[in-house]
Amino acid sequence: RLFNLCFILFILKCNFYVGKGIQIGIPHSDNWVVLVSTSKYWLNYRHIANVLTFYQEMKRMGIPDSNIIIMMAEDIACNPRNPFPGEVFSERTKSSWSEENAGNIACLGSNFDIEIDYRGRDVTVENFLRVLTGRHLPHTPRQRRMFSSSNSNVLVYLSGHGGDGFLKFQDVEELSTSDLTESIRVMHRFGRFGHLAVLIDTCEASTLVADVDTPRTLVMASSVKDEKSLSHTTDLDIGMPLSDRFTMVLLDFIRRKGARVVSESGRQIHTGSKRNSKPNGEKNAHISNVVEPSDTVQLTNATLQDLVQEMSYGKLGSTFYHREIGLSLGLDRILVSDFFGSKSRLRNTGDLRDEEVGTRRQVKRRRTIKMTDGVEKGNHFGNVLPQTNKSIDTIASLGNSDSVLLDFGFS
Image 1 (spheres, helix red, strand yellow):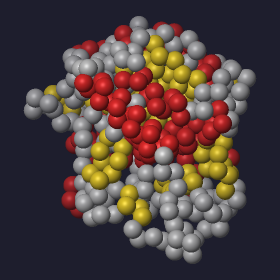
Image 2 (cartoon, helix red, strand yellow):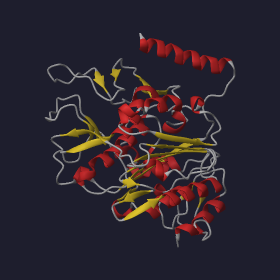
Image 3 (tube, rainbow, N blue to C red):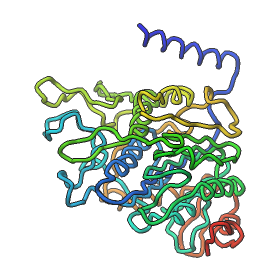
Image 4 (cartoon, rainbow, N blue to C red):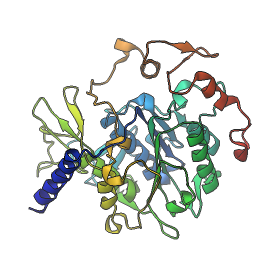
């Protein structure tokens, strides 16, 4: 009864806004997502799983590979300590492994394909800041660049170990509060986003975004100063926690309320954090969390205010921190899909096989070079730049100007 009452109130709120002509949702042209796991070593299994699971949800919400940049410092799928080679899990309902167990949620395996843009030694503070500001070296491949504009909604997610005013990158260097704050200012100055959301999952996460003052920016952090960000779901077989609480609660909300899947085959689509299974452990053929080619993903009217209310201390074990800086709308009128989903209502077309359209890298490049006006313009290293609201000369100047980020000491 309580659930029905909450649902009715939500519908009435949406009808009120529509009836009064109040704007819901941020107008934007496209979405970009930057996912960063800054930790090395097997003991940081959860940080890698966080990013892989986040990537899955963004794909399910309609954001294409060409608009997702992944930075991952460690390849735990191929780590010799991994009891399930080539697979990474974000949740398992049993410690004893079984292929018949329908309670395991894999974020990497034979059924999932992923292209890592920055891996290993390439995951550095310098490269991360270059991705945000667009100030790349001339030889940087296209798939490592973010071609956002002043009409884009950009989501940045970071997971790793941190402390008061810093986030560690591979136990070698640190991203400081001043680094992140200044890079966001540069992004705004050069029209790199229309609205920006920064999510941090680390200890004392709020201190990393405490000085952010750029307009049209939303910051969310898993903990405040002098607080730890807690892990979740320790697995006995793997021997490590599989996720962090903040990321788990966030993605579970997106699964349940961010989008719904309409199945033409009549299957029941799993949207929660746990799959259903029969009492005897046999796989239920009618329950699935895999979106088939015939299914359509529909984004809902869930708002960021609903997401904020979900982040309670009881669920996180830490104090959730969020701050809005000059947003064009209130959180109760900004849709979750404005940042966590694609502006276009996409229909899943299934995996593209090599024999049909070439390698996935070629497919990714084909998606990124499509022009809105049908005109293609080449640059000096033989690729094609997408049409944006900023001129190509302006984009090139971001990579050649020595005065853009003098505070960072980039050459």
